[in-house]
Length: 333
Ligand code: SF4
Ligand code: MG
Image 1: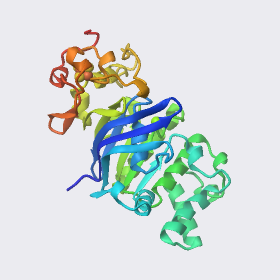
Image 2 (image 1 turned 135 degrees about the horizontal axis):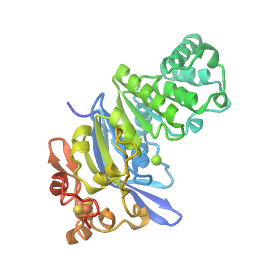
Image 3 (image 1 turned 90 degrees about the vertical axis):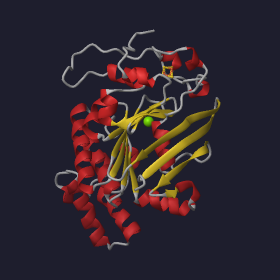
Image 4 (image 1 turned 30 degrees about the horizontal axis):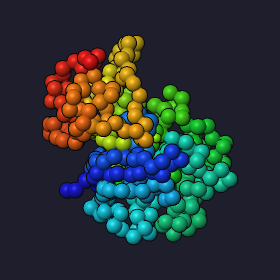
């Protein structure tokens, strides 16, 4: 069976005030039905641009898809009429953003906003649409949902408002949920609650999920597979355990060395030295070479392609085998 979503060699450029730059430089990954893929990376690595391209949400005036394909359930999205793509992204896919305020209309009662989806997409009667909206709010754990459905977005706390956004995203039972840093704006206790909720709902509905995050901690509890992005490209992907146990890219290893293990919270961390490159000046060769502790001469000139390094495990590094073998890359330079 084909994967639910396949992105292959996606290249996206933007026209910005400082010139044209490539935000994505050949992004490839896939998500199976019912599977959770975590896309990891620092801010600016292209995570959000990638999923916005999938949802056909790139700004039309400034973004250009130069190359690559996006296939959903066997259909190539760019080959479909715009209307069909919109319909797919409205009914089959849903997205939850970091900022719940921007996802909601501030002057419409939350119950009404959810009910509207049933009215428009499923031609449900007013009464039935409202009933389903209340049920949706109950399902995401909003207390007194029947009463709270009459409230406006600003009357909810950040965590409760994110629950409303999730209820809205799941209303039409999408097959793919994209969550872009869904908990970043929330405090730590609420973050955990929202992640638990997403995991429960994902399991109950059997939908696939793409979770975008810079937080390795949340990934371990939720993801089946991970894709690590750096400088507009996927540098490593594979089953969660495989990648965690034997990371094949020095950047992934660096990321892992920079977060405390859950059982060793006080551990001293080794941050990755240097900064990610500006998209206006991506280095030649391997984009990670200026920061890579094991870079060699050819890394400055030859760009490594994403290649299979073990079953289901891919990495874009000339020396992936050595990295996997556990040669201590930390501070080796
Ligand atoms: Fe480091 Fe070279 Fe691998 Fe790039 S290709 S990650 S510079 S060893
Ligand atoms: Mg982002």
